[in-house]
Length: 116
Image 1 (cartoon, one colour):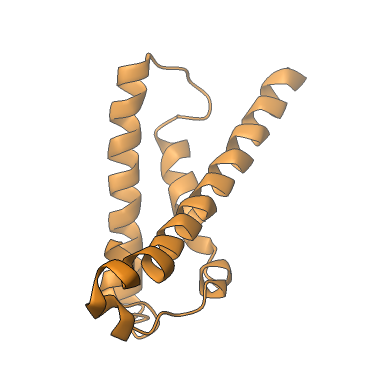
Image 2 (image 1 turned 45 degrees about the horizontal axis):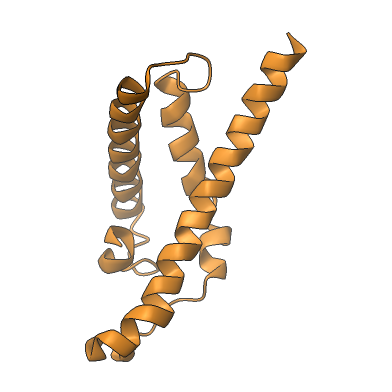
């Protein structure tokens, strides 16, 4: 029983860490790799990366959708889990976009930041 609880919390923490890692990689690509390649990106003023930590509640949306899809308690074959993950990440992204537009915080987040 303790093994299952430990595995659950490790999986949960690793998911949150990977979500923030993906934010960091996207931010790094957008701020350091794209500007030398595409001149138009030099003119875009990016928000500091700390804004992602201030709005860390968005990672909670992913975790809640993953929990709803029972990804933390049930094991699936590889392709079935891949299909569920694709569906879950799509739903999570849509929920986050809806939350941002309904709370009118799009002044803080541009639509291009949301899409990338």
